[in-house]
Image (cartoon, rainbow, N blue to C red; front, side, top):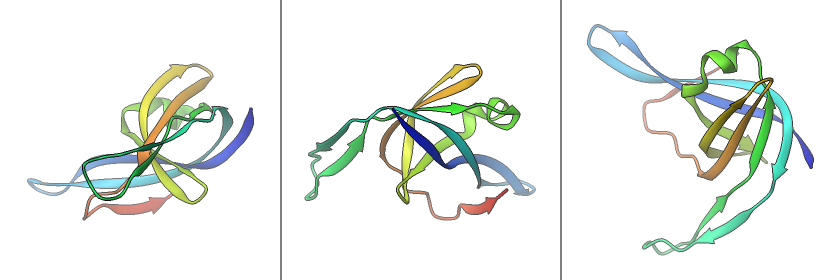
Length: 113
């Protein structure tokens, strides 16, 4: 089991002006353990193969992550953002299973707190 310290991305849709809703991204740093390391190459209908991770990360939960579980979208591992496939609350930890590479939609803004 290896240790994890990295960014977790939360994406909420907020109203920027009356009737206009835009995604808003927030990054938070968390400690945890990587309990499973799996990688595989998927062969889609496109030209290039896709690398998919099936890693499981157990994060030490805080109030923010518990209040915003449904907004978790990605985890950064080795400088790359990966989609979160499943979220399992197991207080005092949160288990995240990672999938394929995360690509943010155009128009998302970033803020770090």
